[in-house]
Image (tube, rainbow over all chains, first blue to last red; front, top):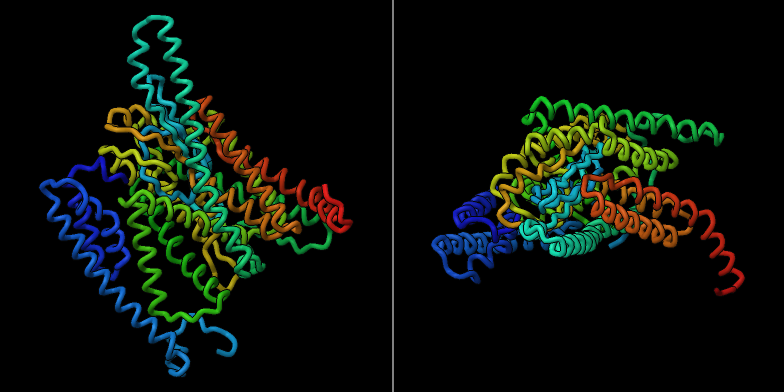
Length: 101
Length: 459
């Protein structure tokens, strides 16, 4: 879908829907929201709905940052301590690498 | 599969079952060229993917006005200009389609070459019940032909079912079917794919991260494909889904059956799209009568033409393709992973209704020339190249030869599309070239090159 041909209310609606959808554990949706509406919110000439779109984009960016931090922390902890956790580590693992670490 | 030029772009949706169709839509003064060719999707696992390639000729509008002048010289000039524009757009569309087709094939070949899972033989789909483990050549050939007959019949049944559903306006059913199909594709197959890739690279992954990643990937995919999303993301998802489908086919179709099926599907595509009573053609015509877009979910669109009026129709077309997909889910395979790929295949070929140009013309405010190609075409192209990569003894020679053959076929098909300006099947020419190149390279060129190399004779 091309944003250029969409009326401004539609854009705001879309941005809002993407923002709200991201609360369903979907930081990827927030990322798409930020990247897609970034130009609309910050670089396009001003129009009535732009401040709202800007706020949605900013909030999506904050949420995205939060999830990135959480995920990075968890993945780091898991990868480093998986072997030491023994049974719990195996239970949590989807794939277990073979061979000697 | 049909190639259709469309003036208005449908939101692409992956149509698993839609057959490849190349659709060109010309907006210009001439009658809408949009003929959706919907090739029945591969009965194989996916719902019918329709490939429509649509190229719209925008200049026609302006030219149409000019041609009203009635001055012969001016008309000739206008005609020339139109033709030039048509050819120019044709060339542009070729380029626009090269990239996604190449990307899909690259993904499939890369996976085949690196992940062992997709080349291991682990059971067959229910659509190909005859095993190829027979000692005699004749028996093996017979089994593969029987497999093909079963597969093609399933595809035909699915296509006809889809046409019937569409004719009786069971849009909700179709819609639900399509959604279920793409759900399965986006979640289940991605899960299996990720698992195998992680195992290949010996990377540890915990369930939490895995489910989180797959949930994000799948949910955003569903939103992009079936609702609204950035064009490039939508295209990327469609390419990924086609690649996943192609990988499933490569894994679960036995050797000889795969080649025979490819040939048979091309012939079926030709018949279904071009014959007056062909299911795909009927679907296209019905869609045209109702001025509805052809299943957007099953079509890859290279450019976005956004019309206000299209939104509702997209859902209808999408649902149609999904239905074909869902029907395929009944297949059970004898395999650990129990992938429900087979069901998709049967759904496959749903005819892609032609894109109604007239309605679109009214709705369109702006037009971008776009080419639409059905997803089924992507899948079968990738199946051919992937099979060549998996089983050819000539290694990269054969793979590259098949790749080039398919692209040449695609160019020719698009050229024909620009000339005929109606929906055309995208499979026959490319698959024919691909098959010819595969067998000749594998059996003639490779031994030739090997012998030359071993004798250190350079030409």
